[in-house]
Length: 250
Image: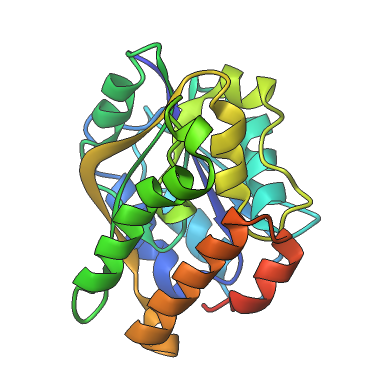
């Protein structure tokens, strides 16, 4: 059985984080390690995290890291550097996984031809956003097919953070981890780099992510923004330019 370290970057995530951590306490089999990396929260994220981590069983190691620089890439790299498991799983604070997620991750990576995996993300809140969820599912395939067809045939799929990306720690290190200069699309960039190690795979299982951006933007605006950002990424727009369209909502 492999050792899976789950890395969770946080910044003012008290509204969603408790549910995420509570669900991780019932994983079967349990995670090897849970690492929460905070980027300087001003709410009670740290206190809530420490309180929740006390409820984990003795099998799962827990760790809270307070990062001196905020930024999802920076925080996830810090978590990866502190991890001791053979497999890294990057989990957003507002995303919830099934209780057999560890088995699914381990089984997926038994195939040496697969370097990185992620799940189908279902956007939920007071209702399930089927249209946006379907578009996000299809984007995993059509974005690399349209814009990087030579890489698509080699196995490139475009995964995003809310799809709960996972890979072998050794491969992550060899590829240099997340690019800390990227304020957005760091996940797509990692997929591209990990392709040298094997295929990128979307697992036929569902995780659920908060619809807080959709509630702020509205379904049509959210879909249009996701599509627009995908097209701009495809034609080579800089990540700093793309960040202008992607509001940080908590």
